[in-house]
Amino acid sequence: MRVAVVGTDKKVMEKELKSYGFAIDKLNPDVVVSFGGDGSALSAEQLYPGVPRLTIKHSKICKKCTVGRGHDFSGIFDKLKKRRYKVAKVMKIEGIVNNNKRKRLVGLNEINVAHAFPTRAMRFDVSADRKSIVADMIGDGVLVATPYGSTAYFRIITGRRFSKGMGIAFNNVSKKMKYRFARENAEIKIRVNRGPALMCADNNSTMIPLRDGDVVTVKKSKEKAKIIELTGEERKIQL
Image (cartoon, rainbow, N blue to C red; front, side):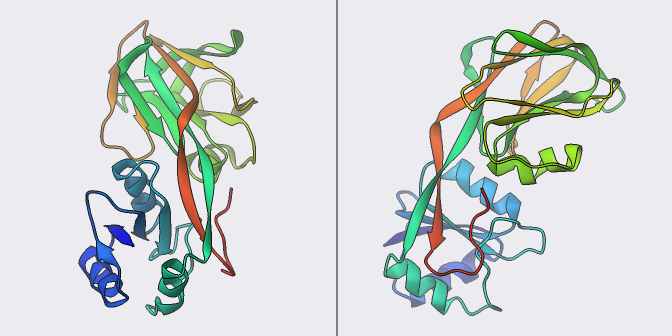
């Protein structure tokens, strides 16, 4: 089995994997091992989209990681080698600016439209399936999250999580509105009335600048993340 590693102590993990007979292949892996926390897991998905990913916890804050017992990974690697696991396909979402496919980002957790400068609030409209949710909202921005991402930034803003559809969270806004929900196949539009602003996806360092009048369309992506769930693990991926 060909394996790529992303995250903390990468070389140490590669050495461990080699000792169990895995081949390290950074270009065409069968499986990606994410070693670290939530950030490492998201980075692994960006580097290897659609490749089955096993996330091994090496952080106190990771909520979706296979729990390693100390630094003895023998049980985890044995199950991986014997293919004693299942692969869960997880929804991702995409944001496209002004229907320009060259201005597109894909997120596993969320698409975030936020102010470009902390000293200036942005103004924006939000609609879902052509029905207005809010008009000329003033605040730090708005994000659209997946169920997988509802335990992350969405939960920090709203204090809630959800298991289906999409969640729309309003970040530090002028009106008493924290969130709304939309169906999984909804088309959500965010219009920037006053920027400057940025469109972001997860912890991706690539961000797309937005000007006044730009419209971001957020919808379910055709791409899916593939998450490895080891057989018999005490703690599995939370969807």
